[in-house]
Image 1 (tube, helix red, strand yellow):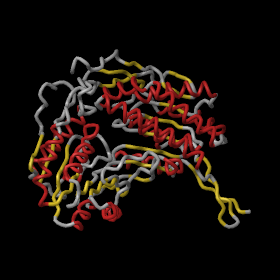
Image 2 (spheres, one colour):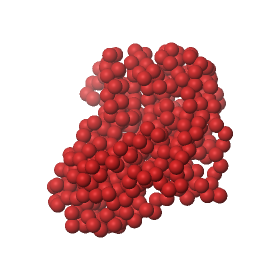
Image 3 (tube, helix red, strand yellow):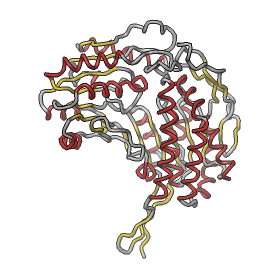
Image 4 (cartoon, one colour):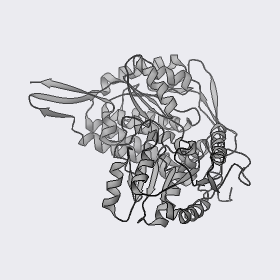
Length: 486
């Protein structure tokens, strides 16, 4: 780490859960460690919640629903904006925590891990006041009403962002929340609860509007998903875990919203600005060290341009400095856990066994980074789309380059995936790029590297999930529709 790096601070210990508007001990009074991704040390401790804690939280949320469900859109918008401001005041500290628990480089943590959630809350505030909460169909008044208590189960890769996506949409819809953060990276959720408690006290919000119960997926996550007092379960994580959540919720016919895995294709058409497309594509694939569900991890390129693409991709990846996440020079940090590092290394070995050409990286420990969970940025070329490294979500800094001969073949390869979360299309002709984008079965497509829009719907086709997050679509996930005939 350079002499200008931000210092690591003392271990963060959280001994209580935020339930029913107050901080209280977990029923089992146990704690578990949060591991520093940069060196494997203990970064903090958080309570190990149980099903009993979920029961208390759900009961509190149901009481809050009686009050909050009758709030006005303008009141909800005020709370969302106030929460955004409270998080902004804590931006540097939360970014530091996420950098250490997830491995995200400091600068990216500031801009994406914390900056994006604050922006998302403001887009929800705008959306809730502009939303068409009722409309007429013949002699019927069709209204949208709060669905009730929302159970939010969130992942570790963008821990604050994914929780805010659910909390913001639920609050905008008039729903209270019981949240369980991922065991790997729960500390930013506690910082969010601190901010929420401050806002709740200042604005006089009902107790139980936001409840935070940390713990394991097997205990707390299962209790939330299968709780008869939860009206909507919103989950983000792996496809396998999402199926388990859906199965638990099915016992009560509880509605589910699932944002799951991805293996997104980035199609570079023959007339594209090749240098820009490849550089941007590499940056997208390796954002957050590849720990991004919507990462463009399959780069589809014209076969006669593959050699040039390989050179450009290698050069772009080599410029991404691998290092400690708090070093301002770092562009790629460690992975979030030893388990994730080992999984990614196994996939890199598999890629070589399947016959891919190793362009960059591999399984060797990066020089000078013996501690922590580091993996070198890795690129494979001459990949067949049927291989596991092209079909399965690796969730690490691994990019596969797949050649195609015709545009139709490129579209077929992009769609030949169990996932359908995101993707990209590059062409000097925007109209042509749009026509290709329309043919890809995926929830989001960016043309020529267009910016992420936090007000647009986010979600996937196929095994990438059910439902949408953000903006008015994200609000509607937490509403019920009623028709009143007059």
